[in-house]
Image (cartoon, rainbow, N blue to C red; front, side, top):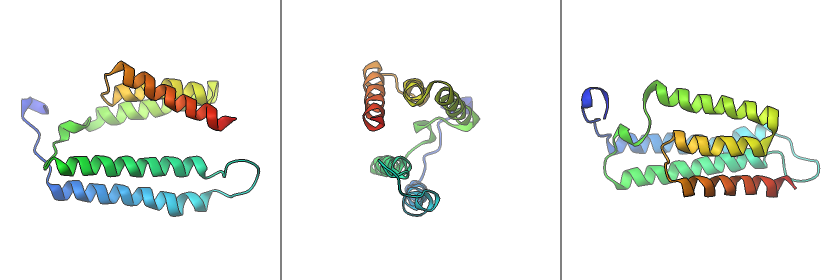
Length: 146
């Protein structure tokens, strides 16, 4: 509930659809234009744009899945996600902590720290899901680092 235990106003399907279009468009723009214009190919191994494109693609897929889920429920309330400055501070703090761990201890350590803490900050409380997700991400990083 929001301030004063008043239920949050339901969002219209139009606002959810507009949000879906803007965010999916941003992911597509990043994938097809921004990232390719900022990285150069060449060298041995994976293309330098592989990981940024993978992330942009994953963001696009998650935005699409979330938008379709919310549209299929009819209306959505703001209670689905953290709201206000507290959510921004939590995620921003997590990004800063992840960057510090990345610089000090490396990519695998950053994933071990950021993935479970990020999932907890976003409201996930199932320990098995947190452990499995962290293991899959760390395993993927180790697989691609070879």
